[in-house]
Image (cartoon, rainbow, N blue to C red; front, side, top):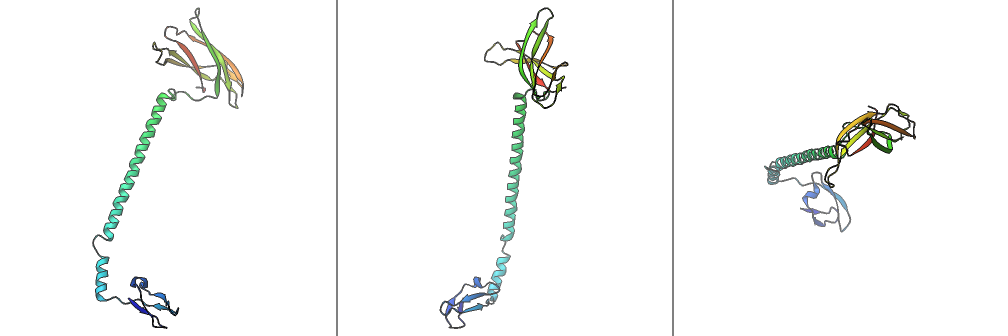
Length: 207
């Protein structure tokens, strides 16, 4: 559209979209005069075209529909990813519970640390005498704790690891360890010499 300066009558071309519905301030490049250019009334043909564009099929409705579809696909993808991650980590935890900590279901980490351990078979009594020393790393006195005694059988193949054939939870009734103290222990169990290759002891909480 053509607009004309109110002061010097210089004419300019101005895009109608700049005026909008309320008009706009215009400055003359020649005399620097400033005036407010009002919007031009739309012709009947322009009004009909704008009305057709506003109700044109597929304009707003299809955009909203596409947005809803994309949102649902994105949300579904996030939910599927979350399910896969939960199953993955659950399987990892299950594998760790089987291979890394085979006694996790029945053994609790103890403040007692095994400092030394030895055992010998007594042919007369048919018992295995076990003795060693435990250190109390807690700030409390520990009395009558329990230990796990693990009986291993060595495989005939050197490449295969030894397997646990028996485990016994034994309570050290006469054992007392003060904080940060090493205390000896000793006990005996029936001889398992026919199958046992070696024995190990793991401290455990009081049963």
